[in-house]
Amino acid sequence: MKRPDIPPAVLALSGAHMVSDIFSNIYAPLLPLFIPKLGLSLAGAGALAMSIQLSGSVAQLFFGPLADRWRPRVLAVAGPIVTVSCLAFAGWAVSPLMLGVILVLGNLGSAAFHPTAAAIVNRVGGERRGTAMSVHVTGGAIGNAVAPLVFAPYAARFGLAWTPLLALPALLLLAGLLRGVPEVRLSEGAGRNGFGALEPYATPLALLWTVVVIRTVVAIGFSTFLPVFMVANGLTVSEAGFAVTCYLLAGSFGGFFGGPVADRFGPRRVISWSLVLAVPLLASATWLSGPLSYVLLTAGGFFLGSTLPVNITYAHMIAPVAAGTVSSLMMGVAWGVGGMAVPLVGLAGDRVGLGPALLVLAFLPAVAALITLALPPGGPHVEAAEGAAASD
Image (cartoon, rainbow, N blue to C red; front, side, top):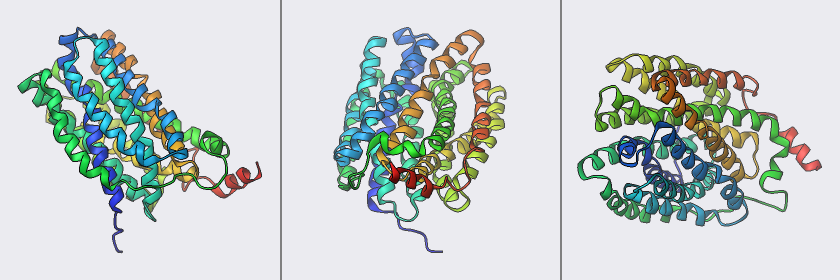
């Protein structure tokens, strides 16, 4: 079977996604340095992580519908530029408040980019939209994964004060990539736009949204506190950054394979089995030590990450309207709500230790897997929902 060509626009957006997410993930790798410099408790560190999720995710509720109604290319181009330009100055923060302001401003650029870019990819992806979404999401996942390798050794060698210099190569790279973002329109016709267009699909979208929230709690909780957990167990900041990079890279590879596998076997099957398989791997990694724990952690990251592009394409299957709004719900609101649980993980870590807190977190994907059983294997009967929408 001939391998489908990936549209150049998808490759350009995937590259911009990678650069944007490298800087969006500046906080966690540098957290072991921010904690002593700014006097942060684990609960305070979790609160800053929550501010990242609120600004970078929940704010997508505004940008997703805006992309449906306005000019998505403007949002897709401006978003990564704002993200890099602001977050590069995180190392200059001299107080938790200043760091929070920098994180919020930078992640508003991320909020503008993510639902818009995903909607554009869904529009230009052709017949294999699952594969196109996997390529796009993998770009961001690789960015998240390599961020610890970029920021942790750099800050350890040169100090936090020199992080703004990293914006220069990133902005030069974006200047080339963002030229490939096409002019498209996400909404067609004079029908309802935004959240009103999603009413006929509310029940299956709500179930899938809940699955994404649970997955996000686990993913953000692990990626935020693993560096601290590993440093507390004897690793250096750079070693902890490398271990987390392996975990995140495995998730990016999982995301790359998840979309094509879902194109062949169906999204529900891929989501449910991936979540189930992640549980014993992540749980074992929290109480074992040595190389075996890293192998298990990496494998758990692979299966957890494989659900990410599938969740997005499945949502577009469920509701083939208002693509920007659908993306904002699955990427923005779900990730934001999930991120709001991160302070609870930090609070539990302060009370009982990070090991037990992460162990409990590792079992949550099993709950999400049970919820997927209520979703039809190939997507809901869209024709019936569209008929209901047409009759409104």
